[in-house]
Length: 158
Length: 276
Image 1 (tube, each protein chain N blue to C red):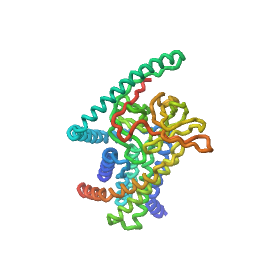
Image 2: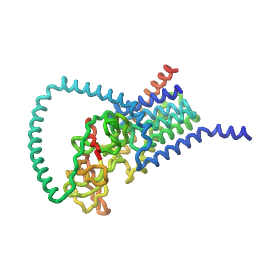
Image 3: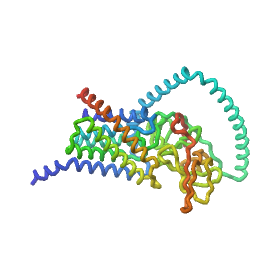
Image 4: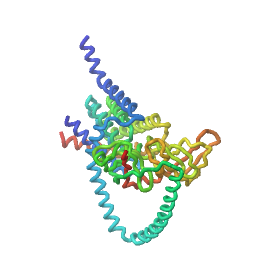
């Protein structure tokens, strides 16, 4: 229960930052994605999966106009992280950052496909390359800070 | 036998849960595509939780910006003041001309028995947040259902059309900008009266789709709402044609439109209230 509340609070904080401070940039990092990756690495359980799904739903409230986009992507990313963690070592910051990079890439491609297949007429964003590279790079750059912050938050509240 | 089944269930529990969650997400997407979002309580609650922090942040930013503008940029004030004075004189002159044209137009409309556009009241609102993702284009404004704002209401700025309300809570609302992929506006070119659908491209530009290649459009032509489609009233400025591409084949031509509103500098908007 306590982990769930901390996760929810962290998600709301991330969304606050993304809708206010990071709105000054044309491309924003996805802090919720970093949170979901952390969840996948630390809680590969029912609770973790449900939290990832809920974080995606929370993201849907503040992003886009079609509910379900981020619920789907975050669930897929959580599943991907859970499937990968048993086969690779993610103890180091570098390995975790690399995982965030791959997860951001998966999210970008998924969003691109979802936009393509749900828009009428079907649209392929002209600046797709810039968006994908920008969001992946920016998210990967902020990931180490987020990991450190989450680790310290967990220590404070444990 | 029972213990075998229990082991099987335990082993694939997480996988089954992931499948259920994925299926639920697909259901949410497929049920909401083309239809209004039908779960008002869940998003409304979190929008309400976050909105005070967004307001505080934007209030703080505005204060700091005001301080900087007042105390650091005094030097530029005088020349800017002079420029604005000249602009005001010019705008006043144009205002008088337009008032004359409006009177003449009104006379002609009545003469031809056109249906009058009923002027509707507007509600001023401020932008307090943007879309959380780089992929979509929405904003959050500081007016909600308690102020009379409902889903579907049109939002405009002084320069032109901004978008329409897609979600409301008690105190805040989310607006889908015309530059978003999911936005479609029935529009016409003011000069040639060519009709098309203005669709967002996700960045700062829009496309005017389904324009017949027989129509003659040129960069600089103004695009306004047609009033058809039932959502946007007629005559709202959408933007300006910036590029026209007419291939030697095909039914339609490709037209790019730059919105009249600069969304990067958007601060204040007006919600057109539905009094029907």
